Length: 212
Image (cartoon, rainbow, N blue to C red; front, side, top):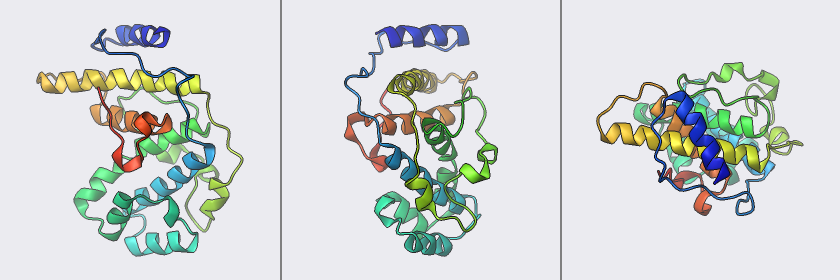
């Protein structure tokens, strides 16, 4: 309840519509975060699919890369489908996962902040040596690295904020109002990644729901 009230104060200052009846999220005691290795593996796979989405590499190169470094255990059915047949529509959808990558890198303390969700993040701002994939590097070095993750409190604070941002975006959409303060697409992707981080309803990556 205290976290909910703190978030509502933030939204009030930002001029975001608040639903005071929206319930509080799980407490720290009720939450089990993903492990550092799980998060690092997810970032690595998203990094590869992101390269395909932006035509940095083709599907054959991505497949060969994942076979070479034994990454198939981490890839989801939807991601396998994307890599095997990366249509232009699928590529466009996958480019949005830049925001998920940023959130997970933030959780691993590789980037410092989750910037206000009105502009797309730029993965070029991530130091090359701290990114899991690229060049001839072995992504398993990153996956098995000694990562420290942010506290439950920090991650739940962010989750609660994006839960309420997302509600405001959905409310604006169904009432045919333009959402001008935040970008609904950015909010959704970050909410998605944060829900995965906190094991929301024990859902796996392909099936995360962003309930509002």
